[in-house]
Amino acid sequence: MAKKNILVDLDLNKNEVQNAVIQNLAAAPGTPKAGQIWYNTTDNLIYFHNGTSSIPVGYLPPATASTLGGVKIGTNVNVASDGTISVNTATNAVSGVIRIATDTESAGTSETVAINPKQLNNAIATAQIGALIYKGTWDITNATDFSGITLPVKQGWMYAVVGTGPKTIGGIEWNVGDYIVMDADVAAGGTITQVHKIDNTEASDIVRLDVAQTLTNKTIDADDNTISDLTTSNFKSGTIVTSVGATGSDSSIPTEKAVRDAIKALKFTATNPSLSVSSGVCTWTVSNTIGSADVIASVREVSTGNEVFCDITYAASTITIKINSASNISADLYKVVVIG
Image 1 (cartoon, rainbow, N blue to C red):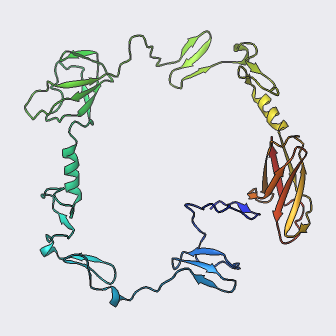
Image 2: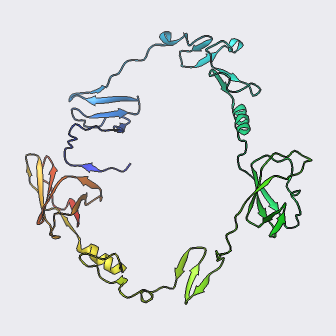
Image 3: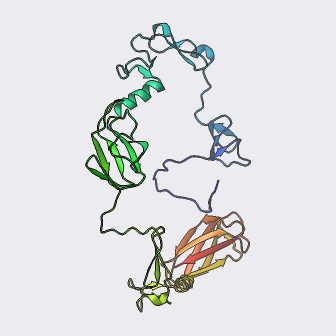
């Protein structure tokens, strides 16, 4: 799992740590410190170290089987010593007992009845009155009525129109790509008369581009929604700029090189010199070549690239980094990246 090292104490100023998970370990850490806590994934207990030994937090031994067995919930429901729940099915209709309904029983008649999956599916299907359900396609190539749709049908069933069109059927013009929706149930042997059309054909003033089209020597691709063959010379003078000014402009677009040059001018990196410890802290002073306190500094381990958390203060000429350490820190262990 990815991690970030913290090289400074965190003072939350009495604020809460919410939705946190403590460290998961299969065994106690090698050299725990007094006050260190962790979750043991082997015995599923939380431990803390008191400076001498590891102690489980709030641990109570489990009750024996004799104290758990024979527990009854309501009437005819038993909990065995292994936690298994059993129901006396011969009398499972007793009030207060959860029972499993068969697929022929009425659902929802009691809060103590749990229905099986088949009964649940039947209940959902019954409740789906008028729901749109895709049932396939309707070919209008040779159609003169709706007889090409296999009966029976249910209200809300829908079919994609395919074939050759347009065709006027039932007083409605149908185009390939439209959808026909059943507005009423029709039994086998009946006639479909109540339908609804979902129009998937654009208005006459919209042009559909199925292939590349050319406009003023430029290609408009309808599939990718792109315009190709554009160069900087195709833009109005001053729209594309090759350098970024100090204030910038909302009316111009910088080139890639202009952006890279601007970013480079507002970034520098440095590695630490040898640092001496004083009262448990090593202090690293970095020259702020950007010349402004409005910068962001990130400290990382040189060997791994992992970001570490330190105490950082900013000034226009310097950046001061403080790292908690029990001993001196060798040169080039850490790198600072400053962006302004």
